[in-house]
Image (cartoon, rainbow, N blue to C red):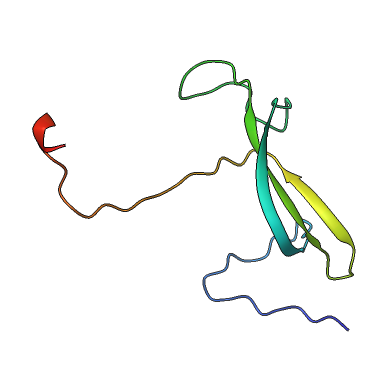
Length: 95
């Protein structure tokens, strides 16, 4: 018999209007593909041009019932954040 995990204090409240799909993560990667209208952005708000390729996150895993799953997650833009606590140089020679 499965039991529901208690939410952590920082977790957002459950949304009864959304179904939940749970997967035990095995592998995650991404690939670039032509955008699908309705699932992906087809225009770049940053550049003001048409988008030729978008990242699709691919998740391989297993459901709690033991079914193998491969999810292709659209409209996700991975990014990298590098904190920098020092002062930036004021001139080109210090850069």
